Image (tube, rainbow over all chains, first blue to last red; front, side, top):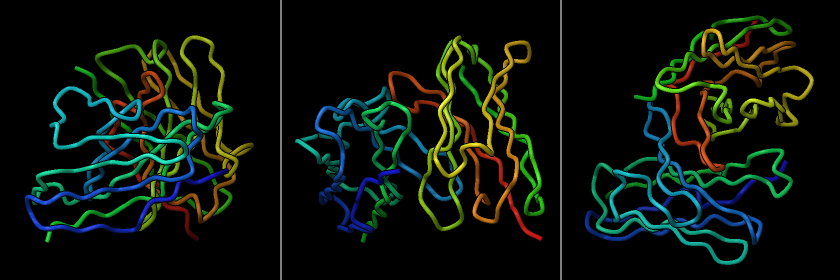
Length: 107
Length: 117
């Protein structure tokens, strides 16, 4: 089954911005983003390409264009150091695909 | 308050079986689509199985099709994953998750499955 491609890692200093790409999505699919800290359950960060669940700060924003989606984290904080995964349902709606994951390092 | 508590993991030999449970509280498992998702040590997230609300239709990842079975029980408000014919590559932390509109909005804490002789 298909896999969504993400950069293995990105890094920036506190206060800066990082951008994580997710390629391989269907043009008419909705993409979600999940934040995973070591030893903790994943957390929904962005859904329907750009929407934030209640409690997620607006420093996190998502977008999608064609077959690629993007997660931006602005005003980077030390607590943002985690692995981030994109995900989407395959157009057949019979299986879900996660991205390869991107480790964010706050320098 | 929505809560998912996964259990049932453990050490099992290749070819063996396990039954994972996910006890739900704060909602009825039959009212939502539910999934199992796993993460092998040092690897990324991998969706494993899905069950629809009320129906219940099911879908599986190719890697587990024919070996794993997802189900739920309204009587004890729990989600289950029966794992048969286990292989070393099935070793992972298994999460249960509640889905809403295609998104995994609530996750359990995970239960660890280790397949080794």
